[in-house]
Image (tube, rainbow, N blue to C red; front, side, top):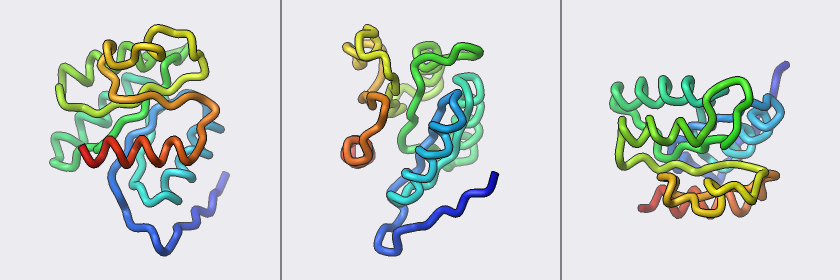
Length: 138
């Protein structure tokens, strides 16, 4: 499947984002939105892949500014386990938990699990934009 990504000519790259989700449609749409907002984006389909990519980019001297982690990945490592490993690799990692399960403790008390913020599914573009800008400024 080919996608045409239209960049907003008035927006310049604001940071580098790693997006992890196991659902292809969410990856496709969110990648397009993030790129439209001016971010450089790479993706992973589970936590193990996200950790490997995060490590590779960090070791290359081109770290991610923010990581967005899907909380539950039925056939792989989800965000709850991935954040533990990412914190071991980089205690300063800025990670957002992403979920449609609003009652999960990892969502209601995200900071105690090591996350810097939350994005509820379905995403609201303005909420995503504001949260990313806030975290990248820190």
